[in-house]
Image (tube, rainbow, N blue to C red; front, side, top):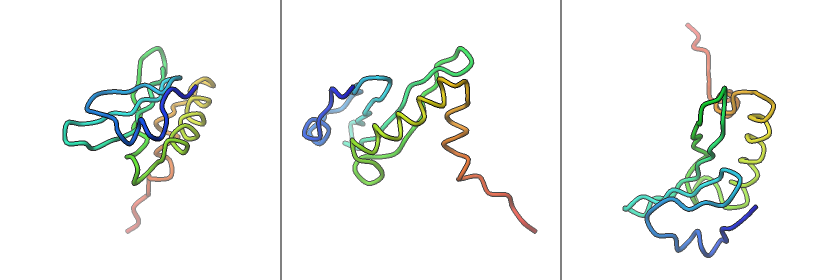
Length: 93
């Protein structure tokens, strides 16, 4: 794992750049960069956004987070739901 380097990520041009094992760096024409993990859940491909670069995640942090979510997907769990479980708040009245 790990075709990308920090230098390649910093200088990446517009497009999708693979790091291996389902981790991708998406670069928009505007130059905005974000990490995406591609996994399979219940037989369907799912792209899970991990965060932006460098504000949210560095290359190492993206690999670590992707590894954790990939492990959950292999166990048959919904990796997207696991990622979002801390974000869900129950409204109180």
